[in-house]
Amino acid sequence: MATRTAPAARRTRPTTDRVPGVVIAGATCAVLFFAIPLLGLVWRAPWSAAWDVLSTPEARTALRLSIQTSLSATAIALVLGVPLAWVQARVAYPGRRVVRALVLLPMVLPPVVGGVALLLALGRHGLVGQYLDHVGVHLPFHFGGAVLAETFVAMPFLVLTVEAAFRSTDRRFEDAARTLGASRLSVFRRVTLPMIRPSLVAGALLCWARALGEFGATITFAGNAPGKTQTLPLFVYVTLEGANSDAAIILSLVLVAVSLAVLVALRDRWLTAL
Amino acid sequence: MSLDAIVQVALEDFTLDVELHVDDGELLAVLGPNGAGKTTLLHALSGLRPVDGGRIAIDATVVDDPATARFVPPEQRSVGVVFQDYLLFAHLSALDNVAFGLRARGAGRSAARARAHALLTEVGMHDKASSRPRELSGGQAQRVALARALAIEPALLLLDEPLAALDVQVRVETRHQLRDVLARFPGARILVTHDPIDALTLADRILIMEHGRVVQVGRAEDVLERPRSEYVAELAGVNLYRGRADGCHIAVGRDVVTVADDHHGDVLAVIPPHAVVLHTAPPESSARNVWPGTIAGMERYAGRVRVRLTGTLPIVAEVTVAAATDLGLVEGMQLWAAVKATEIEVHAA
Image (cartoon, rainbow over all chains, first blue to last red; front, side, top):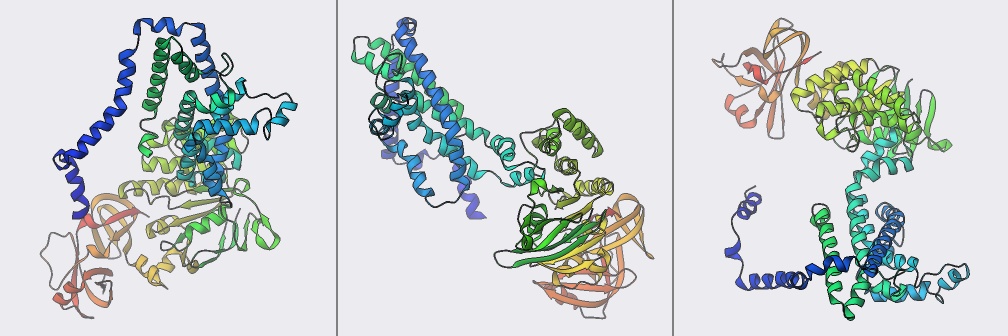
């Protein structure tokens, strides 16, 4: 008992006097490294021009397109990702580890590489794309392409979050529902899904935030067509290259604000689990 | 509505092999140490785990029989289960928890809710209908779980340690209510418990299970009086007295047991052996109960000595080996057993 209570008691005391100065210096640098770029954005932001920038048709179009594509990508990720997460969490089948690696890959792959891969698979002359082309489905330089690129990069966030939730649910509740007469599908819909709802929301939010910020895979696979595939991050990049850096800064701040909002919404649910 | 079952399930380190028959309106208590296979037995009966051998028939309808490859899944069986920890759905109100089974079996929303409301009223929980499970106390959750299991009008009702999660005070009261509700249920009932009081107050018969086998089965008093295994002896090791209470005095045969609180009518008084203090001379102590007795036997186990006294009120005391040596305990010795009134648990019989 004594050994177990000791660390808890120690934790209440200030620990700064035990931490070497070098460590504190390193940690401070790291914090500054994260904070300074944000400060740079805020510092240079032409606040007075903010409304003008946000009301230009180009910016509006990019913003609208970003919201549409990211929401579509999240919807697809939910429809496909939840069943995948369920299978990964509950079914022991040969090759499960391979599938797990496959799901994780887009998270560590450079998004540009993802875009190239998508192009070679689903592009006009791609492995699958050549057949899609015959039936009139065109992805590159079309809305659908942008959605697909975002889904490819963002879905793993949803799958991992929801899979962990499926793993940790108390399956006895599902047993209870079955003895009450619920079929397997009904148990899933009326008991399992409500039980994992917090994780489902967290996974969907993470997925949506990632889709909203997607750049590399989108520009490589779907191109940079204004009104079709030019989402907000692409528009920021293009405007920054051109003359109007004010617009780039304001729109960047919009994306920062959205990301922060997601972090705040998730603070208890996902971040503590990491 | 009766149950006929031979349940054989291969478990990791032993095989569950139990034969059961429970009549209509009968309550069978299943007792056994942890890991005896009690929960597996309930899972097999409810269909959550198919049997490897044997045969289960509810109401003369076979629901599981590997020999004929017949297996009725849990959602199609008429088995209500009150689970350990109750397992109420956290996202649903008490009312919707009770209505869940009716909805799953095809009832309309309003019809299911009306019936659920009637059931909650039956268990005295109508004023908590809109509460979420986390807002309910243990005793309240138990009653909602019971109403939920009864809602589907099962032919067989299984209760897995329905009182274990409650503290002593609540348990006594909840056991009362449980008995009243169970009395109105017409089907066969099985209660898994580790508390002999549950068995004595609720069950018609008890079945003792160890390592997946039936050790003893019969009327509770008969089984506990003639223990055939160490586990049963341990169960029976508590001092149980049936008597008639009038205020804080309970008449047990020609003796009187004094307890701390007021009770009336037929009761069961429980004295844990470790609460009995032994004296070699009539003690001048604050204990309200002092009975003379003669040592009829002593058993030593796990660093303790269990001393059986005969007298007008037979009693078992548990003392340390050191205490037994100090007192110089030997068989046939005359002793006085003292018990504080506050150490005695009283249950309505």
